[in-house]
Image 1: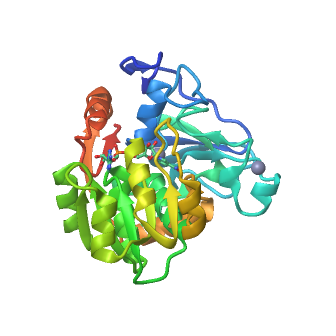
Image 2 (image 1 turned 90 degrees about the vertical axis):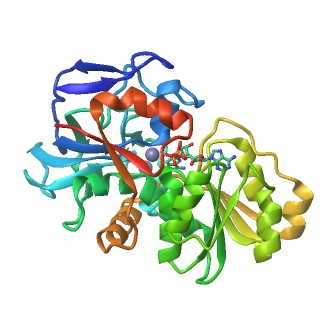
Length: 337
Ligand code: NAD
Ligand code: ZN
Ligand code: ZN
């Protein structure tokens, strides 16, 4: 099968023929039709994080396709079903986190396109119990970005614990952020969109942001306090430390900063202000299988719609280059045929 492979960090991905994966007990083989490109894939290809991915690696955790084979013991899926293979590729099902509906925190989890091969290929195998079923109302391409960008931002907004009408600041209107803002509107919140590129802010306005701020032109925290009295929560899905510091300062007393973006960096937080202002800082990692069903349902009902540019798998190196420069508006979805 054709696949895009990371052989070494910081090198171009190699388009090559590799064997179709052999499935085992409880697994399905999926013919991948579309796979979104997440900034995490770029972090993986660069070896940016303290925990490194396997090498060689087939990245991709927004792969959507059709079940072509089912392994022994699989009863929940049949040939022809449409599924997505997410970042949360597998969890143990038995630890305290799995038992309490927090399988995203399972310490034994496997991650699609990181610790195991993912969706930048014609085929990908996955444990039947952890794939997402794609609702009828969504095409493969439309569903792909929901598999990570969608579920992650939907979960982050749940973690923000807001009431309808409250203000949420979204830092970084990229693949994740442009969906975060739509989930936030659908959940009844008022949205402040912050980015450093004007085209992204233009998109944010079109998608219903109540306020947009260019963080390169003004101090966004100050602008947010002046115009709203401070955000009730901020969700940072940006890729630079500066955005996280600004997001922290954007939150009013009693508010919450939800940390989602993953630059390999530190976020220094003033102890005095955090205590006196009663600010919460929470990390949020993708979403559970239940969050995934809900996130897909919002999309199937047309409440959120990813802005998508399709590119053939062969163009992945060009796509990564543009992502690095902040030149992608919305999400790129690779098509594979
Ligand atoms: P992306 O490249 O599509 O978007 C990043 C956006 O951040 C761009 O629009 C860019 O202009 C903006 N940005 C950069 N610097 C900024 C600044 N100083 N202020 C405001 N905006 C700024 O990336 P993406 O696919 O949306 O992923 C974003 C991050 O989220 C990555 O680090 C990725 O690894 C991480 N991520 C985390 C999770 C999780 O579960 N926690 C899941 C998926 C992705
Ligand atoms: Zn992702
Ligand atoms: Zn577990």
